[in-house]
Structure formats: structure tokens, C-alpha cells
Length: 341
Image (tube, rainbow, N blue to C red; front, side, top):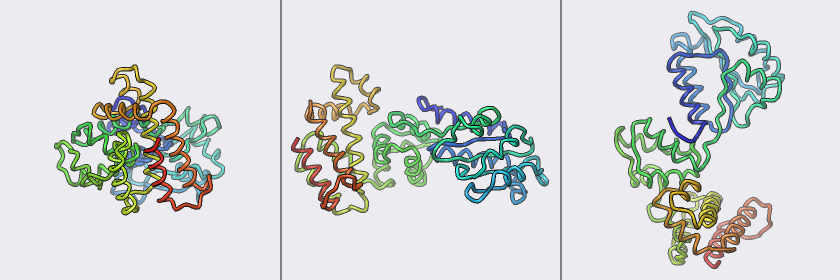
């Protein structure tokens, strides 16, 4: 079980309960981390529905086109040639007259497993339906894994799949995925399909199978900016602009903002030990020197100006701040401004 992320810990606990055939009559699955939600929904289906009778005993409806009263009618039926039936309301947040489900939630059938599938925003737990769910249902909150815990959770996931990984390729994978756990899982699927279980995942395998250029990537750009290596920065930016489809500048800009935000945190912890900084900021041991150097090179108000430049670029990308410049030119100018700070 992973340390740190309660969302991942709760996910594993619920998966273990299902493995033991500990099945509840009503589930509320809601939150932002779609990977957890989809995996749980699939697991519930696997343990509840007999493949031989799936056409009779699996009912999937969608909130935009289904009334809650209709879900009640289906849920109150008895399964055919099986002990249980599964009733899933997907996109439940769009279901009208949701309170019509309340009488069933309060008195469900043992032979029906009802899943109220509410991805994205959470179901309001201070309203009638939320209050009833808290009292009668098993609830899973699929919170996004916090950025500083993503590497820990990803490593646990990799180990559960039968692999191992070193800190450097793990950090490369996490940063390239924008520290989004669902994205990391999708990228890992590419690695798993090319590397046999039981092996240690190497950096060159992440680069090869995820599709990261070994020399010209966002990490190389960050490092060059940290060291104020102008020629290297210009070379990397030129590569990005020539391969813009593989390097969306909006994502590059967001990654830079995230990077310098961490640099600012490191700067504010100048008197702290490396271990304390790594723990608080969420950076691996091999990167601490780079972040320390960036903190020195952009000391004082310089780091504020850097983040203002990146933020202004983002606002112009979004059309909030007006500009007539091509986005590619705008991003290049932003990078050069950072070098000049």
C-alpha cells in the first residue's frame, strides 16, 4: 500500500475488499482521478456479474438520458439465473430529479449492486442525496494525487505490477506526465507492453517507449535555464519550435511555471538541509543540486520576475492579456527574458 496518498490507499483497501467478495449494495464513486474510478468500476463488475448471464444482469445507464426513478425500477428487479445484478448510473451528475433515488438508497436489495458513478466534481455531501450516501453507501473519493506524492504512488503502482524503477527514470516519467497519475499510468502501459515483468525500468526505456527526446526535452530546458546556459537554451528552444506538435508550448510553459515555483520554495528554505528540502518540495535527491543552483542564479526578486514572465505568457496564450504575436514567438521571447533576468 502506498504511503502518502489517502486516495490511493483507500483505492487499494476497496479493491482488497472486493477481492474477498465483500460487496456492498450501494457504491458512490466520485472525484477527479478517473483511473481509480474506472478500475474500481471494472472490479465491481468482475466480482458481481457472472459472464454467462451478463446480458441479463448488467445494466448501464447514463445520467443525461435517464431519470432516477427509472434506476429505482431496474434496481428493484431480481437477477436472472444469478445471485446478483449490477446497475450502474454513469455521469450521474447529469441525472435530473436525483432525490428520487433516495427511497432505494435507504432500503436497497441485497441482490442488486447499485453504482452511482459521479466522475469529475464530487457529489455535494451536504444535500439530501449526499447525506443518504454517507449513511447507507460505500463511498470512494477519487481525489487527484497531490504532486508531491505522485512519485511515491507511481512507484507503488509499478511495484504492484511486478516491476521496479530507479528514482531518475521515475522523476522523468512524472515530470513528462505533468505529475498527473492517470497520465503516468497510460505512459507506463507503453513501457509494460515492451518490458517483461520482474525487470527494473531504466531511463532509456522511459525515453524510448514514452517518446521523450534524449537531448531536447523540458527537463533539459529547465536544467539549462537553471545554469543560465544560453547556447543550450537556444538550441533546445529551436528544436521545440521545429517539432511543435510533439511539444505543445502551453504544456511547456506550464511545466516551467511549476519548475520555478519549486525553485522559489527551495530558495525560501536556504538554511534547511537537503533532506528537509526534498521532503517539503517533493524533489528527488539527484535533482537537489540543480534546484539549489537555480535558486542562487535567480535569487531575491529575480525569481518573482521569472514567474511573472511565465504567467504573463500563459495569460496571453489564453487570450486574457492581448497580444498580436504568434504563440511560438511569444514563448521564445519569454524564455529569452528569463535568461536575461
